[in-house]
Amino acid sequence: MKYNKYLGIVSIIAVMALSSCTDELDQNPIDPDSFTEQNVFANEESVKSALAKVYASLVLTGQKGPDGLADIDGIDEGTSQFSRMLFYMNELTTDAAVVGWGDPGLPDLHEMSWSANNTLIEALYYRLAQVVSFSNSFIANAAQFSGTNEVQYFIAEARFIRAYAYYNLMDLYGGVPITTEISTELPLQNSRKEVFDFVEAELLEIQDLLKESGTNEYGRVDRVAAWALLSRLYLNAEVYTGEAKYNESVSFSEKVINSSYIINTNDANGNGSAYDELFLADNHTNGAQNEFIYALNFDGLNSKTWAGTTFLIHAAIGGSMNAAEFGVNGGWSGLRTTKALVDKFSDAVTGTRTGGEPITWADARAMFYTDGQNYEIATIANEFTDGYAVTKFKNVDVNGVAGSDPTGNHTDTDLPIIRLAEIYLNYAEATVRGGGGSPATAVNLINQLRERAYGDASGNITAGDLTIAFVMDERARELYWEGLRRTDLIRNNQFTENSYLWPFKGGAAQGASVGKYRALFPFPNNIISTNPNIKQNDQY
Image 1 (cartoon, helix red, strand yellow):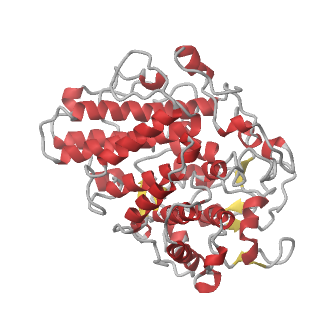
Image 2: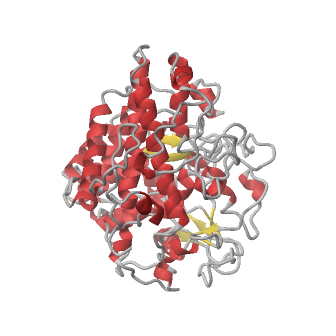
Image 3: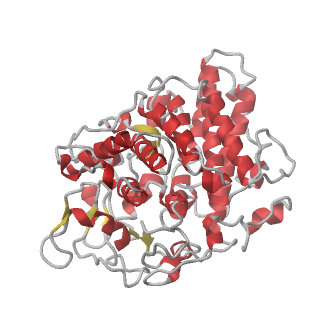
């Protein structure tokens, strides 16, 4: 297990007592504890094991493995995992993805017709609330430990995880209650700006409390993660607070760019591009790890879940695709993409969309399966062949060897949450938006990504190409299916508006605008009925 291998723990399931923190953000997760605080916080090694639970709260779903003893009640356990639901909210609601399944609440997401009764929206709120609960419990208990200075690093890491959870709560739901201590009282609701200020203050404070760049174990964050999340936070500040902070985004992007992290250029499988290595089963060792500032770690034997990259890989296989080539035992015939994303790569297309050989792209980031797939989507439900399939994530290593799970069910592929390429693009976008960066540097950073994608300088741009529209399309090409698309579209006034349409946006085949209020998700009705201090978002 990668948590065992890199965090040196015996089990991420033997964890801390949280029995008194289930009111954090008004959540109702099932209490997972089987040990007391005295048992868990007995020495530095056991504190480290408890820290692993904080990290694992974004990865796993329960206490037994892929299913059984779920952390959160009232939803399919596999569906409740953080990155799976983040994909639903931030990719499925955009031009990047559709899914043919009819699970309750799922069709409403791509159609942008969700309500406050949507079980998926509710479950993600609970999941993030649980992350806050675990973090608060760890921070409170670890602060009492009179061990070595290493514990101080542990506390700073837990504060980063909590800040990341609040960043997502703010991005998805707006103003949420801020709770930093264990309490049974119903918390008051904070404004979105207050949550922004809290996340900002936490990241600024812990930046010097985290380990130096590149000195922590794989799977744990260092101070560069705080800088990177600040880069993202400031890029979106105008949306969150009404005040632009592009200068700050440039500044913290520069700190990340000048750190020990590097863009992966190791074409370990010799296919002409080092981009695909980022999404293979050995991406913790094949060179991609040097680009990962923060990643969720998955292991097909020891951290099993029906979500994470297991979901991203299985769900994207169907039609005439060969699941064995992806290192798994079969496809779930669900996820595809729309022509709007495909068209972002249209300047690099060779071949034809109908008949003959499958399409190939000069840009290696265009990882689509087209054989037997329709470019146009006639119907989303149950028609996997409508829309191109996405082949970005695979459970094979650079030699084509499948991951560790011999059944082919669960995957080893880690999922990057923040990687250096995003920060390159943050710098470029903030610069174009007036952030005070160097346009020449921005062009150079983008060209580094494009040279990796094209295998040479044939796709390079010049300063004249550096526009907001270009940078936004470049973000789509580089970062699709990595949980950022909705936020990008909102920042560019394209998510709800009719200035940019994609197939079945707003439930219309050719796309339609929706109410601007849908830039935020509603607070689940169950949350509001539990805590009258919370006011529902407008028009829900």
